[in-house]
Image (cartoon, rainbow, N blue to C red; front, top):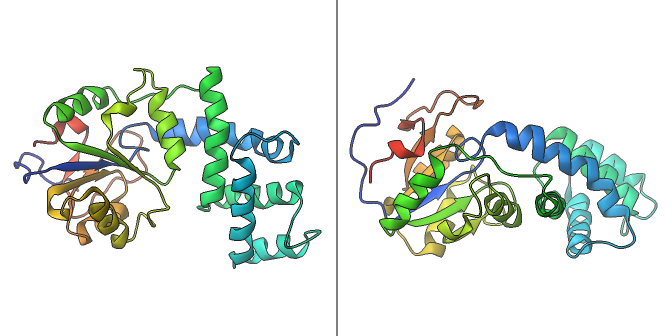
Length: 252
């Protein structure tokens, strides 16, 4: 069911955008980025000459692993040579388990970001954006609307995606970047935290996402919402949220 999108929006001072299925096709993330990182994860962790940031991400992964109550995760930890300092190979096995289960992990996101950076800078990766994205972002910037990104991918991964798009580097369009360190995207408190950080009251913030649960959480925090229904997106019902098919349909 779609909701009418012709009504004039409230006075909006800030717009927070999801990425996957909102500004960039879901297939790029699921069929290109994730497989690319998974292929190189073990080598990235196990190589003696680690890239900057890898060691810190590994320590965070170990900390997450110790607190992980998933039975398979616990079984892998019990099998580790030393539960306090698992080997790189054992850590790689644990992270691969998280990938197989599509589990969220801040440490895994950081490692993926490091791997993607190498892919982007080498030219192996380039982010495709929907045709309406850059023109609409430019129009909003001209209106002095604050723009922010809130994605489950790490801030590093977000900035890489927007640095190497088919339309060039567009990171200068955004004022703020938020990832799961702010809080879960299905939790209203995460959106309240963003509101406090950018110093804009929730009623003057518009959140746009292809995920109805995220829109629900943003709405519960007091924000305006739009459900982005793109071709190929897995979620087709926006529930109570007004539906848009591209960013240019948003009236400010």
